[in-house]
Length: 333
Image 1 (cartoon, rainbow, N blue to C red):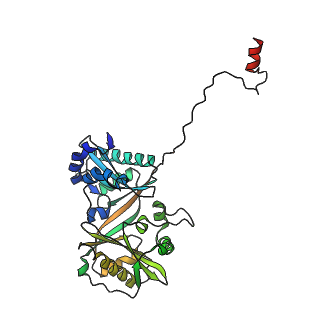
Image 2 (cartoon, rainbow, N blue to C red; image 1 turned 30 degrees about the horizontal axis):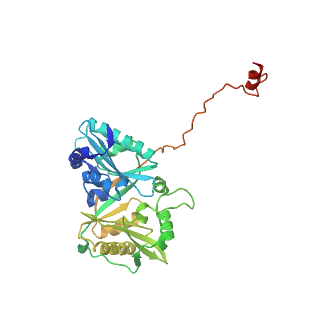
């Protein structure tokens, strides 16, 4: 039986978290609180209502953790356990049940899209998600950049500053120009002309944002995210020369230098081809490629309950030829 996490499930989740997998490169490489502690402490934190943990305590047990995106009809499947080295039919059945339960519950909570990221070398897990209805819509490469102080980045003569609210329109145009239509539709950002939105990371506090300006408008963006075990940089732009990427890389590393020293990873989506060459010239090493998947749920409609009308007296329809009104019948009696 699958049910929401309660206090009695703590030991089971604690045991399974050592055999699970994070379904997000930043959580997998950057460090995160243990799933058991997240599930236990969620009700007492301001963000706790955005984290949902489901547990199955049959057949050895299984757990899945889902994170709702604030202000969006979207959620991420962030953690799944067990993920053993030896793939078994028993585990496949558990995954089927857990993922189907997540999809059903998400639809009931008006969540329209579920996301997950899976390393492409984890073929068993990737195939399982695809059988459950998750569809890959892009790929994300993870580069190891090393320690910031070990990198000598040539900075170009470009203006780079923290993003402000005044950059919203420029960032919208930048996003629409560099992002394939398929990706925009998968992420719910391509509703139609004049309905361009920004990705969640661009507009939330999850990442620090530095904008590169060209002719007074945003032409490039670096997103910096510090983590417990590692830091991350993500690059976006219609880069016209490598010096623009080098400038954003140098400024992004300088921004992360204000945090505790950690290894730095760069995230590059497959359609950001202008970023790969400058990173490789600086010694960045491609570690893994992650597949980004989405599942569109069937949102459960909420309609007001209709009270049935109870007929207290049989009355013939007046439009029926020869019908006698009930009042006339009672008078004849």
